[in-house]
Length: 184
Ligand code: 5GP
Ligand code: MG
Ligand code: MG
Image (tube, rainbow, N blue to C red):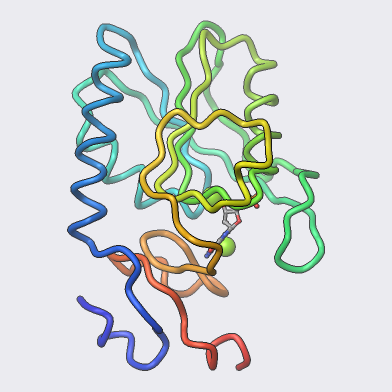
């Protein structure tokens, strides 16, 4: 599939499928070497992280388990406030576990910063973060992200798990939407 398949909805492709896959190879190699000999629990944040989780986890040789959380961030409009509600909690006991949070994108970082403290309070051996995308705004928040795929500009992106009104998650690349899509 390429940008033309989505007709006029997409403005441009920011990251191709090939770029994403190459970067995931590199991230997986680093994770494998950092967690060598350890059991790793990957925690995916629904729903955006589904694609990253699927493609990153399949590149790992480390012994892994997967679990999922769904959170909703209260906020005005498109900005998250950092006030978070758990919609679906983990089924896994985190005591003594090495936890790697898998995210699609960090924008303000407020949701993630809340999530990290929440998971740290459950007695894990470690909590780290892997995200495919990070926006400049994230730098303002005190959250240390160990694995970052790509630093991207402050633009609204879709594809590779990321939605606009629940659409476009299935695109194998990351792109921006044409203005007419927002304006209806
Ligand atoms: P924050 O880091 O601001 O707390 O929120 C991150 C969440 O906001 C992401 O998990 C994602 O759901 C959403 N988000 C932030 N930036 C974008 C973007 O450019 N495109 C899409 N589709 N969602 C975004
Ligand atoms: Mg997310
Ligand atoms: Mg969304």
